[in-house]
Length: 317
Image (tube, rainbow, N blue to C red):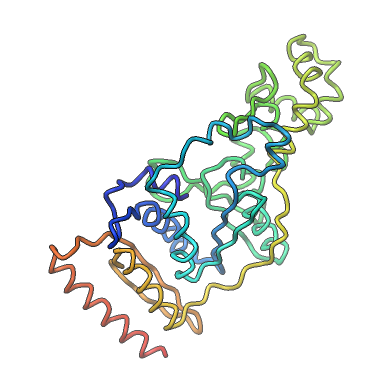
């Protein structure tokens, strides 16, 4: 999400120290839009290495195209992400050897196993494998307005012709250019879906490869067997060994901290609406970049908003 937001917003959006905050701002607005729409029990942001070592060991070209240098304006925003997003009351999860997708998939499964429902906000279709009756993928498309697209089992079946649990098999056969996975030679979406419909899994398709009528397909499956098995393992999410996240709960101290953290980065909270539902405080925020000291009217409005927050907090606490 930070990469996506970085390229979606101009680098001229900077904090008080002159450093760009466009990725933080864009990602925050994107997440807050879905938080307001779905009112989740908890929010978890996941971080991890771009490419897990075991996946590179399985296929050394995995994510090779992503190894280009990170823009100079982005590393400090990644470093700041935990402190910034943690101020919203969100859980920050990091892993030193597994990727963020593995964490997302594990958290979603834990929530479903506990009897809840989970939403996975992502721009990666690999996560379609997590879709179920209890887990919905919120797929973010670049340039699309109106929020993320909700993807469940029916949408996955309509898109690929297979159920979610076969997405890793499908990726292995068709390939995934964004991850550097080539797939089986000459196999596209239709052929991959047809193989899985007929055989039920990649392993079964490989076992029955000798009976394929098309010589080119038969050869692609037989000759590429070991590679295809490795591609499926790469595409399959691993358990990250995490615990179910705590509930989202913001009290006066946390809300004041959030205001301080955003102010430190030169971001204003415009508008600010604070609603209290029983013991839980829900904060709906729309972040916008301040215009330094040139816009006095905005400064006056911000002070008025802060007084409104103080009044609301005093009434609640």
